[in-house]
Image 1 (cartoon, each protein chain N blue to C red):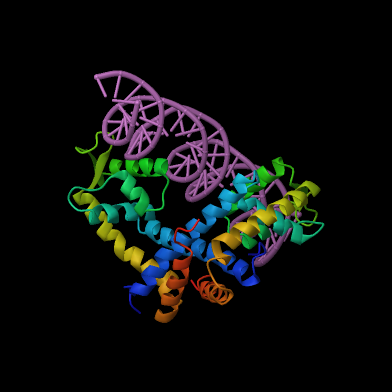
Image 2: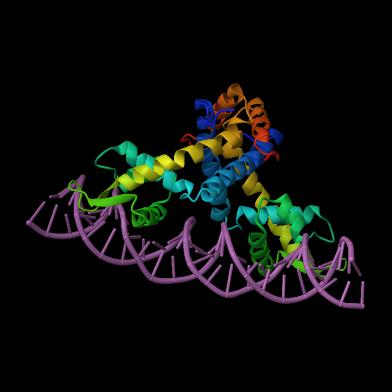
Amino acid sequence: MSDKPAEATVQAWARLMKAQHRALGSVEGALKAAGLPPLAWYDVLLETERAGKDGLRPFELERAMLLAQYNLSRLVDRIEAAGYVERRPCVDDGRGHLIAITDAGRTIRRRMWPVYARAIEAAVGQRLSGKQAATLGELLGHLIDEPS
Amino acid sequence: MSDKPAEATVQAWARLMKAQHRALGSVEGALKAAGLPPLAWYDVLLETERAGKDGLRPFELERAMLLAQYNLSRLVDRIEAAGYVERRPCVDDGRGHLIAITDAGRTIRRRMWPVYARAIEAAVGQRLSGKQAATLGELLGHLIDEPS
DNA sequence: TCCATTTAGATGCGATTGCATGGAGTTGCC
DNA sequence: GGCAACTCCATGCAATCGCATCTAAATGGA
């Protein structure tokens, strides 16, 4: 078990950082250029929409997305201020609440998707064949799971 | 040329975001845990060290790293305040200056490397075979280059 | 030479992030 | 029931980011 990463490992690392930076930048840019909210809002809206009528608890969102708790709390503040979600008291647990998407939220999410999709296509789809994309997804999958 | 990204494309996108977030987080965490400066400092120190005795211009650094100009300017402020680089007037061009690494900078960079390397190894190396890492690097390479 | 344009870099300022902490409610154990 | 430990979420504060703008210096003509 060596400490010295192989050359290929270091290159993969460096390109992972760079490719993500580039891809994220272009997607955020596309959303901004279209006068739409940032990507993080999309994720919240999508999760809350999937969660259905009752919405979901912040801590569930926190796990679904990759966000620190304090960070999520304020992100929800902003989205709520924009009227796209609402916080409702939670009957089961007096500490928390439920975050539910509003009609305006559903609308904006649907407006965001085409822009988002086009940007993903430009950043990834047009640069890789279907097979390559599948391979990339599979390899990246190995970097995601738990093992400390 | 479709707008609708294929399933594999979307998955690759999502995992790219997630894998990078995870990998970056664990590297930053390792550095912080070791009481060392953040990753961005490493990159600056490495580039300035590579640049040799005279150092390099901020705009060169800006291109080598993936950083906005205003952002780099203040990053260098901080690293300079810590004593790891110094700004020297530039004879060729009165607008700019040269950023050169100091001895303290070289020292701290050398102290950072083992921690950084171990973290890369844990985040990437131990999860992928050499061949997989090479393939990942190659695929990510396609996402990096220019084409608008 | 003189002036408009461009380039290098810094900076004011509002928005976002990270960290540490706080308050409120719940749970487990006696 | 009573209390310590824990979970859920918010928030004060400092650091950092992003944007727009500013100054100074170089450049390119006419």
